[in-house]
Image (cartoon, rainbow, N blue to C red; front, top):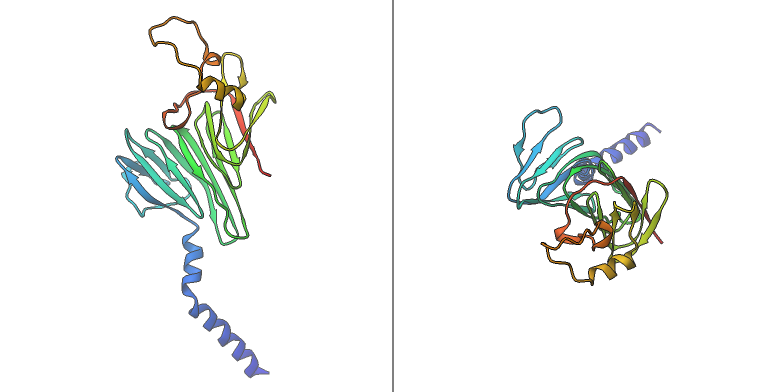
Length: 235
């Protein structure tokens, strides 16, 4: 019986030695890292007061601040998901829990714009949340781009709603935005129709409000303020 116990212990030890990369990969996945950078990208590590230049391959731990300058961007690997940080953006990583089955990522978007491509691990799930001062986006597998006023959905089905309960649903390749003048979220059908309407000359005095123009979506989206919330639904 003693021999059997020793053999079992030896077998367990060999298993641990035989697959060191497996354990190391799980440990490494507890952190995100920078895959690519363009231009001026800086980091502020937890408990540090100074900003330092970022480089491809840098590890990003919980509560790390990331800032991009003019004409600068960064591509961040977060488990199976990726985050593209657009120019003039600042965000922090509030929570990063990455393992083989489930991934939890929470980001605080202070200013600017990001694009998230969320993909769950095989056989698992991903809870991916982006918060800003006025909006929250929570997804489990989709692609979208957002700032504090505009939403563009590449894949999936998005519930776009105000705090008062007014909402619209935005599907693949759809857009919506917050019409501040009328305190509403614009349906993707109306947004699409407005995008086909020619814009008035810049010098014209039309008195048009935000509700009378097409939203700014895509690479030209700006960061504005608005009090609304975003929620997501999946089929």
